[in-house]
Length: 255
Image (tube, rainbow, N blue to C red; front, top):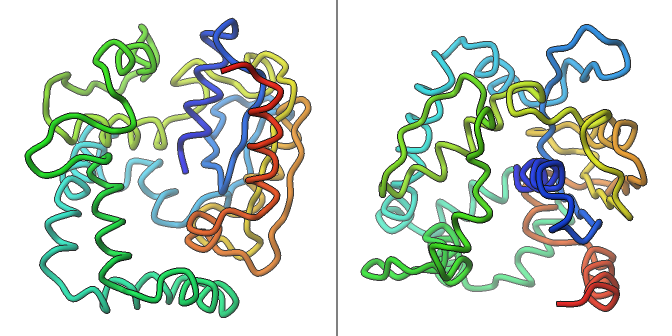
């Protein structure tokens, strides 16, 4: 969800290390705190809960970020302690009927689905394994972290080996404005070869208006609206044309 925000920020800081292609699915969009009319963000772009958190109703950014990250770090334990059917039912309630049908076809075994979600949440690690299958070396991890001066504005998060640190930083960015992290889509993001966006029209967490906003702010951006698509459904079931785009881009970009 917020990965596209980090992709934009990375492209801004290290344009020489980017391919020029960005693919966003149900993209999280940072607000703008500028009074300039051309970069104002839609008021109801994100859910009510997120809007309240952004306004500081639940406390300061660092407090909310660490609190939510602490809860998120216990997700795998929570998933393991409650029936798989409860988890699956909760997820299905947030999907459209078409997505539920697709879910049942793709994940007929509820327990296997929950095990997959735990594995993903653990970053591809087993309980006794500290090595991520997605980021294999400390050097690579340090290279992709956006920890340069001013990246998080006034958000102060302690560095350390706690597993929740990464989640806390993700949440801190989501609660920030474009100006907080030095990324203003319209004026600071270098022109990309292609920015391809997909967004569900029934997304209740991040309104499709966020995708429309990104399309208007980012050069060479194309938005595909997914009819009857919800946030959970679009995240779980990548549209076929997303995979086609990934395959096409991989052929154009040397690895």
